[in-house]
Length: 302
Length: 261
Image (cartoon, rainbow over all chains, first blue to last red; front, side, top):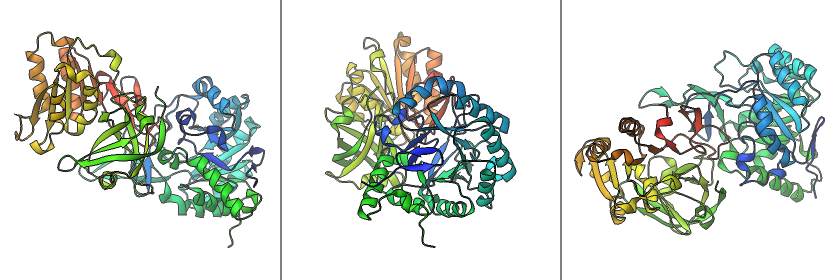
């Protein structure tokens, strides 16, 4: 039996397969379809301090080998999440990573502090890279802003902190380094790419928000390239994502330097994809007589 | 709540029923076991990354161990579906959504079904569940005679079918909502009726307006671009008086007076 368990700093997972924030709701939506306890870790839909109503429809559309979304972080807010969503998540028995977003470092810290007092939270993922909030720039587009948010959260919590990076930057390694300097324990990348789609008959944008985030297999080569840059620029463990559809895609991310991987858009197409990939990785390791998944991490011959 | 199933099921038939219209029957006992009219299935048109997302289709007919969907060939997904043959397998996720609340239907009172174009799809399942057997009015609107679907199926159930076409090539020349208005004006105690509708947005908006004026309840099956189908991605939101709701999970059937367009 090959060893699939991985450590991302203090965060220990039974296997390297996560479901990405915003693509798996609060997991209960998938309970009829997937054996949830087999998943390495579940990352929740992003939570903000106050409830967010989200963006006007249409919120998504399909594009070539991908999709655009502009949900706008619709969520019930921190307190309602704790009261209504967390207990069923806890019962699954796998590490729960809560994705959080806020406007200021102080607000990020406030949410982090509140969640730190709850036993069933395994780690926090800082969503500083959501492209759908109608703001001028993203926190993850600015090394200093990234540093300030990560630093504030680190002071507020002893939970492992994952910083989620945006691909909408000139030099992703500069942002990754800033997160590392500020004390981030783990990095996750990539969030979605800015994009848009046009309805030609009306000459209007298809999305109610005009722009959205592009995800799906269309972005995989770019995600791999960015992962490789971050892997070389920092020492932090990385959760790789961006268009992973199957076992082979997941293994490519691991070879390029991801200690763990997350599936996102693929959940919509095949709700069982996460557990299928876990089985697929096991098969691959067996066939290639690799005893431990860690041997593959960053093993790209380049 | 019905339990959601995902699996590969066998296609029992896939027949052309009009210019670009097809009817597909899929043998899926576990899917239909708990399904009801107004719910839908999310279909993977091909096991590949293009097209990427599943396509939602409401139940057109619910049988003991199979269901039918009615679809129009429009894009890549439906083109692929049209090429499937009897005996092929197809990846189905369902039953999804809330469906029509059959328990709230009072059969002593009259029900009116209004379909625009492909809107006949979920309404036949509703009619077959009992609603249509009471010689209820079924109003079908389409652009031309060639696009009028399922009139025979409704007639077989004993329903009183009336047809409106934009060009007058069959039935009344004009909008199906004109037929509805005439019907409501000519019906004694029309406030005892309930309307069930499916069709394009302008049609549903007009029905909402008429239903409000005549003070009768109206339910509609709605559409929106959709990804997960199970309420996880929050992508198929529509605006209601109580804020955004998800077509896939809170709908697709809504009380039309709740919808804000």
